[in-house]
Amino acid sequence: MTDNTVDPRRRRFLTGTATVIGGIGAGFAAVPFISSFQPSARAKAIGAPVEVDISKLEPSQRIIQKWRGKPVWIVRRTPEMIEGLKGFAPEVLRDPESDKSAQPGYAKNAWRSENPEYLVLVGVCTHLGCSPSFVPEMDAAGMGSPWNGGFFCPCHGSKFDLAGRVYMGVPAPANMEVPPYQFLTETRLVIGIDKENAA
Ligand code: FES
Image 1 (cartoon, rainbow, N blue to C red):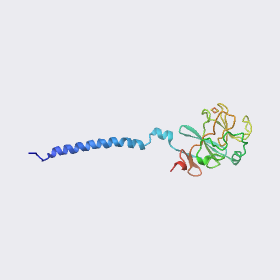
Image 2 (image 1 turned 90 degrees about the horizontal axis):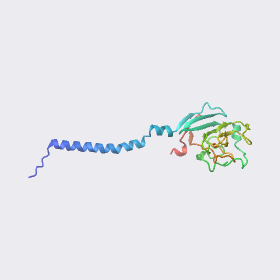
Image 3 (image 1 turned 45 degrees about the horizontal axis):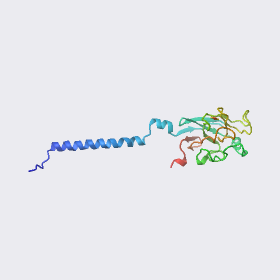
């Protein structure tokens, strides 16, 4: 005859074992999930958006903010500088409409920015990655003509205008890159995120 009575001590043991095994299973399942949605400190350091205060940036000045290990320049252009972006003869710039260059949609225009007054640019030459010098003066010595202000790369002589558009006849193949960015207020902007990618 089969004994159907259950020893309460044995039941407690079985129930406890099942709970522990279930707990281990849940633990293994939970670890990858947690690690997948919490960015590491390194990921934050190299990829996180950065906020910049531009309230002290005067017309014709530039400030530099590091983002993803690269220098990002913010230049406040004067009305004369904005005017100087127009009217280059077709043979002066390699990609005047920025058709073959890297920028968000809102920066694919004559001044390559959301607001003509502020240029935001990755400060890296598109030839071999040197960091060009800021030469904002009109007709600056040694820059040739036309020169309405811009950037000069001393490594191999590439020249860019004040929208980061590359001149013809220099080694750099493309305009300088415009990163994604967004104005939070009139004097604060965030680099690394924008309205186009925020959805
Ligand atoms: S790296 Fe700038 S011209 Fe070569």
